[in-house]
Image (cartoon, rainbow over all chains, first blue to last red; front, side):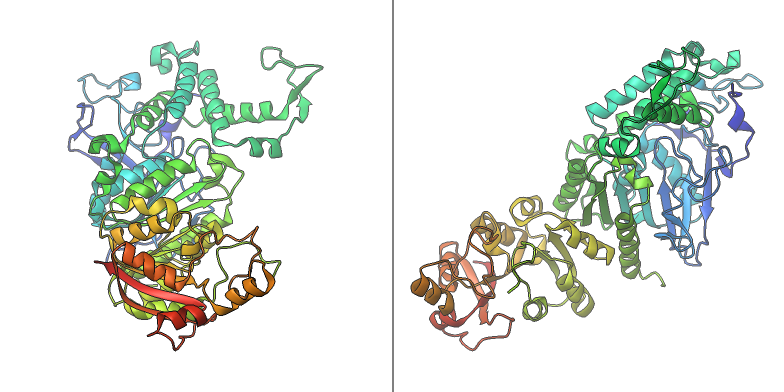
Length: 389
Length: 212
């Protein structure tokens, strides 16, 4: 069993802002730490910065070895030297979201609303954050880095929600926006899947009312089930069939581990179990609850009287919306709705649906057409922005 | 004539056709090209006339090619997507060799002249003498280099003649600012002052319209 405060020991690159941060829910953080990574070099004009926004269970280690898992960056196929988001050309910034568990202020941080020394950990008492709060935290970092305008903001899934929020709230600070495999609000079906995951965490005997660290445990079983359930939504039926079909493998001997017939289990079961168990080693259960809630609450149009176009009225940002054919978690029709709202706002918008059988996960995987689109769109924007080649 | 080619809206001899359209468009204007293909016209208008040119295209492979080339193109089609643009969003809305393939051509024209101050429309002329002759002589649907699909697989569901188009402009109160007839490779034909002759000898027609 892992130590629940394992990641606290890792020193993440960060800035701590002493100023208060008022969250959308009304709660006030007395100070805020923003953990981030950068790649490439900021040019003299500070005009080549690209912000990459990570998804639900991602983090700031976008293009380098992950300090916990030892695996490569989660978007190495997209970000790096000579990649579509070329770090030889762009200064790439990736920020651990507010509420996360890789160094930014979140449920695992010490409380700042009590005068106890040492301050206890927030845990489930961490105030609810929104996608808007996450973006305002990122904006503080961007201001701190002295960048007035980001050349581009890119992200998939929940990262795409942040891209939309950036473009709506800070249009003058975003030259180009690339929301990928995302939506302007979280659908009832998506909220439902999140709720299954949350209930699995609550039902874990080691949950301990959200204060699992007090008994030296983590709700590993519940968090793993949450991840397994979510992982199914990231794939497509075709992808599961292609990868596993109905193939069998030897089941573990322990009957509490898996139900087996003649000693066998399906490969897809084994795969999901692996996805679940490896996840709990790197992610905090309270962060998972906080961030899934932030996604669920996201509804950009609601802030603008229900009219998504109003969020983008008069924008000068150039948009590139990308969806994938087999993504049923964030289906193309939701991307098309964003594109049409941008049309109503007379915005400059490109919109492509990439053929792929890989489901929602396609945006993270090797999809050459998607990568050509990203590289070409950024190149076109660089011409319009007068960015030196 | 290539029978094996996949079905698409129309055979396109883009360069000459587009050069004629580009001549009609003033520099520095806002342009929407409906059915822009891989974005050749909008690329040309941006590079040579500094236009803010954007495109809509129905074929996803073409959209991918255009966006990967850095052009602002979105997947969509003339029948369903024009309604989402605000009034007067563009100075020119271009529909090149596509009018005959849309579901509701009259509505598409109305939308074009709602969202744009001017519309540039080109279409193959069904009044051309060869088509008339083939129908009269053989009693079967004509097949020419321009109309090169069998009736059962043609995407061109609303063919019209130059005369028909003039009539529609009168009916809808559109002002024809200029028009010309061209041959099948897009070369300007010499009957521009005589609609009846153009209707007989022009293989393609090109119109610049505005609201009355």
